[in-house]
Every structure is written in C-alpha cells, then in structure tokens.
Image: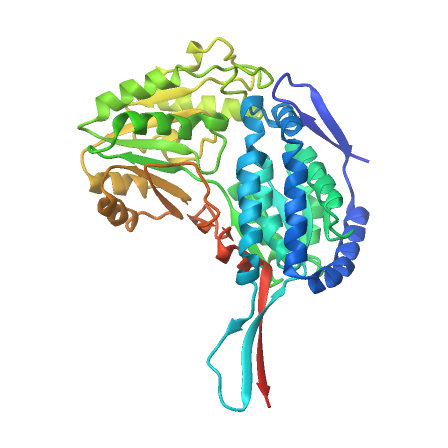
Length: 461
C-alpha cells in the first residue's frame, strides 16, 4: 500500500502521512454517496442551510488551530492563516446559504389556460470536487457549499499537500449532522480520480488547479456528457492610470502581488504603469516590498512565509534568472531578505523592471513572490498588453474615473474587472474566467447552476 506525505515547507520534514486509498475505497464511497444523496435531496433547503451554518461555526471555533496546521502544510504565516476561515470561508458559505432558497425555487413561466407549467431545479446526484492547496478551505467551499445546498452528495479529493484540510472539513460535516455518505473525502491517486470521473455514479466534477490538471480532468470525462468545471490559474494584470491615488495603488498592488507568497490564482502577476506616474510608483513599490518580513510561518512577526515547496521556489527563481539574462533589472531581490535561501522554499519578494513580453515572467504563470513592472504611455497600450496572455481571471485598474474603468474593462478578456481593488473574491459576484483559466463558474446566484439540472413540467388539467 502506497502512502501520501505532506512535506512541510517550514523545514522539509514529513508533517503528516496517510495511506493512499485504492479503487476499492473509492468504489465504496461512491456507493454510499448514491444512497445518501437520494435522502438528502428530499430534505428542505432550510435544513441543508442549517448544516452549512453548523459547519461554518465548527471551523470558526478552530480557526487558530487551523492557522497553525496551514502554516505547516503550505507555509502561510499564522497571523494570516485563520482569516481563511474567519473571513473568506464564512462569508462565502453564509452568502450561498442565504440566497439558496430563492436561487433553487421553481422558475415561473407564462401560463396557458388549462395548463400548469413550471421549471424545477433538481440536483445532479454525486459531485466530485478536486481542490488545490493554495487556499484549501476557500477553493473547496466554493464548490462544497452550493453542491450540498442544491441537494447533491459530495466526494472531496484534496491536494496531498493540504490533505488535512479534507479531514477538518469531514469533521465539520460530521459534527454538523450532515448525514453519513452525503459528504466524504478520499486520500487517493490521480489514477483513481480519473476512474471515478469515468464512473456513471459521478454526475459532475469541479477542479481547481493547473492547466495540465484541467486537461487531464476533461480527458477523463470525455464522452460522459457530465458537467466539468475548471479554474486553472491566471496571470492577472494591473494597470495604474495617471489619475490614480498613487499611495493607495502602491500599497494594494504590493499586497496583491505578495500576499500568500504570491500563490493565489488571482494574485497580481504583472503591472503596467502610465509613464506620468511610473517612476514614483516603482520607487514606492520597491520601498513597500522591502518591508516584508520573510521567515518561519510559525513566527507571529513573519509577514511572508516560504513557498509551498523548494521546487515551486526554484521555478520562480528560474523565471527571474531568465528575465535578467534577457535584460530585466532586479530592484528588489531575495538577497535583501535575511531568511531567503537558495535551494529552499524561502524566497523573498522580487521586483523586476525593464521587462517585456518576450520574458516568461510577464506572460507565463509564476505563482510566487515576483512581479514585473512595465511602463506604458496610454490606455490602448495597457489594454493590448493586459490581453497578451493565455489566461483571463481578473484584471485591476487603478484610477478615479469610473467610466474609463468600465470602458477599459469591456475590452479586456477577463472574468472579473476590479477598480481600485484586487485579489478579492466577492460571493455576490460570479467567479469565472476565460481562455486557459478555464470555464467553470462559482458563487453568486449563478454559482448553483453547475450542480443542478433543469426539469420542465407541462401539466394539462
């Protein structure tokens, strides 16, 4: 029997280890899910929402413990880790529960004398959720909450790096009174995941992760005619216009680039700054980047921890080296941070200028604490550069001009347009992307759609 390990980025130790569950375990889980889902679908939306609330409360009371576990699993500093539950998870879970009764009610249609007609929402059945490590609770709740609220059973396969998150979610669901079999988790292999996707008992799949992973998921589902939702990352741009509040733009762009060590699908990964304010922006950005404290995520003074692995950090170091060899200039580098060590997961914030789109660091996802800042002369140039990417998740515009933002936003290929904000997921709005970011949707009233099928009733009296 093979085993899965969490190699901690804190000190490269084995933080946790579990047996890899084989097809027999998955087969039994699917059988339980099918039976349990039939009963769950008969429960009221109010009862399901009450379970979501109890899950949220369970996790909220353990947020400090969770923060420590997250630090060991993926490197986020403990002073920030609990906020994934206290802010994001609870906000999204409670919003989806609050809007569920209206979102799931029958759809009314024009009536004809002698007939009753309506459209009813029905759950898909069993949904497989494959969740990533970088925001392990937030990305999972985007799918788990609406899927359960809609009356589905959920089987969760979490990234091995944060497999303890799956166990915490299971504990929360069990404590909340979610019926046995309605929510289950598996620590299993890619091959077993692919086999589950091909199994007729799986009625929908949601995946968050890499483009290669998304391709594998879609191949596994080929010919099944089931819904496959994917969110596959980004290379999110920021554009600072000449009328921006510069101090505010600098502060928030730095945070948007380096929070969570830049390991966010909607992190700012490239910045375009109008020539009028470019020099002042770069100077202020560099000064703010140097204020980060790189160190052990278990230290309360740490504001940026290690990346998830040495391999991930070395990938970013490779992008930086290639950019420098092509003419980029480092104005803030890892050698300025005492705990930044080559050959480890500890990589300090890096700021590059004199960059262009011939460099991978400006067009390929970095998923780390590096940012390139490029000078532009007008909106058209900024728009062309923002669209020069295989990804399209979010784009942020820093300006005092609302009309200009909407006009620019209409020309950008992206899922979300921000004005004077970045790296935030508002559950009121639909979360989606274009191009290689994938074609899934989450949150908002539209976020239930991937977990539902429609049935029309045409009843003659």
